[in-house]
Image (tube, rainbow, N blue to C red; front, side, top):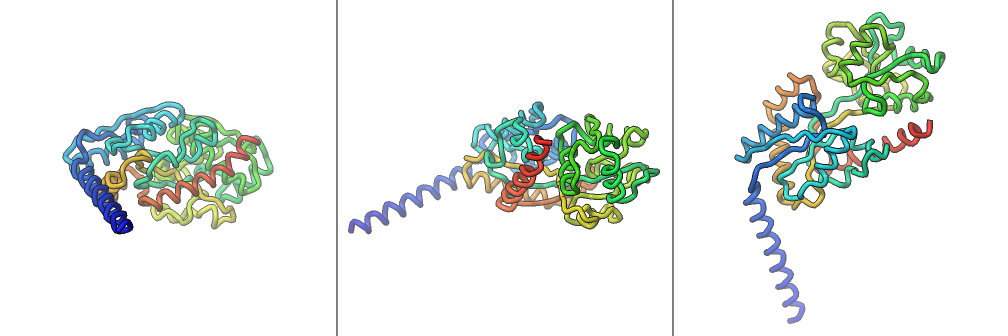
Length: 322
């Protein structure tokens, strides 16, 4: 009888928990939603955030606004997203900097502070040179760097930014150090490409979509893409791996909730976000923006974040010590 009573109580507890989750999901959302974007208005991350905000509004019949929390090289917005009230009404936009900021001691926030929902984008880094450059392959460029350490100039973003770290990782795999070229800090790929076209740089590291206009007009040449496979939009650009350097670097974007958001609410959000990411409207939007769709959901996304943390840990240990 004692065991029977225990089983009855356990069964009632499960029922109560199940009903509670069902009621919670049924009442969600109970107020307006917001997406915290760690980067400025008008940028690529902001534009993707606003697309999803508009689509969520249609599906959930509740307003969804994008809040740009900038500063600290992305740390301010990432921290705000992680530390928001865990009721599901605040969605965090997380980006590739999440894998590097804590290792650079910019913030203590890591992927473990979130419940990952969806990766919706991933654009690999690439090495680009001018159309009249002497370096038409990755090997030629790396050989020139080795023969003339501290002479060639590169850029793509600020020092320590995503594209700077991408080329540092590539250099390490090729037996070079970060200081074997002069990294010229800029506000981003647009400024860097203008410097390249003006003859002020020897190479740029950024994503292919960011340089799509210049690539299609043959003003610049891609000599390597840091991806597992060639980009379908630029199939003539060989991967670094194909050219003997075992290295990949992806600039990704994704959505997450706070770690303690109830599972039923997180799953509901995930379902809607995945539907949006698989829609024709999203495909058209991303094609228009020039971004690559790269979808990972739930646990697959979490495993990817874990792998990214390990990859960048190795790179940044050398980056700081070099």
